[in-house]
Length: 332
Image 1 (cartoon, rainbow, N blue to C red):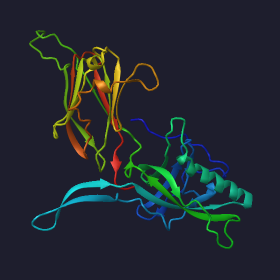
Image 2 (cartoon, one colour):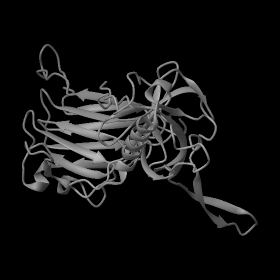
Image 3 (cartoon, one colour):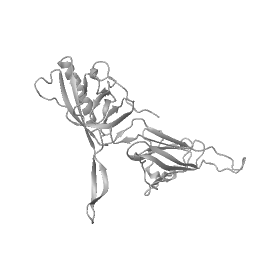
Image 4 (cartoon, rainbow, N blue to C red):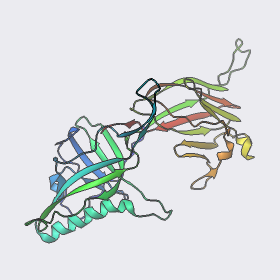
């Protein structure tokens, strides 16, 4: 499975080091190391004193269970019934202590860190803002990360003796998606079986038309929205969640392409919804019209085991379905 990570670049201008540091006790999560990856891909250690700054354990908050807004309906016999639970954006408070050997070294580090966090609010060429990533690593090597935007708090205390060669800031990071993810991607591959002559050596039904029923496990705490890649040959592909009955069908003929040929690929993203044919351009051709609207449901995977079916009509050698997702979690 591929490992999603940004290149580790030593942030200017701290001293050498900065691999994350020795695990320190953090409220809500216990001993851990932490890093922040800014939108430029620079990795900033947050629990390594040799970097020129470190996390103040007192004051870290917002790392545990998601806050929900509950929609309730009054019950005629008294009380109420829960109709819907909406997860709310998360706010994380992360206090940092920054120091230097002299005033200018301290100021340089302070400015560099401020830029690294506020960079998440800059619009890119496409008008979008790119989040940073806060990552928590446990002593056993497991990691969870969350996408963050700077909201407030990177300011000096303004008390006597501060701001000369050291100071502290309590940064608030806003998370539009409140769930933590495992950075190691889960992938599932299903490929058409080998074609067999019907009468040799005895009557045989090939499995090439139906990749079949299978179990996909979501090891996270909440539903995930996978990305699917279909590789031809195929004339039509249907994805069904057997437990909910939800399904969607991809028919290349609906966009005038005709059957997928051997090696041709289409990627279906469920969040945000999109369908792209790999035509050699950077973003691919928009194939949203190839889905079985209006009844198509781009379903997700619930925590635990999910019984699903991948069916490829017109398949042959090389036909395949790949799905991938990052497990999501309530807490760090």
